[in-house]
Length: 69
Image (cartoon, rainbow, N blue to C red; front, side, top):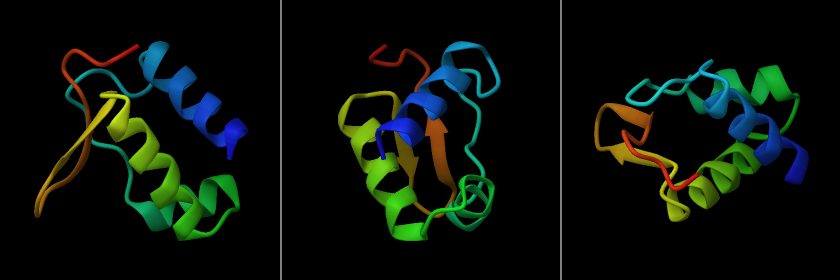
């Protein structure tokens, strides 16, 4: 999971996923990274705890406007 976290952080930092942008759905990320949806969920939860991502009920997961990078 560390590689997944590192790659997601890299994409956030390089602007692939800029502040305020929505992350792709868990199923899409699982397909891209060839991992289970539960692995994606754990990675997203970790980045939410770090303040990098925020969840918006009914809308999805977004990059925090001012993330904990």
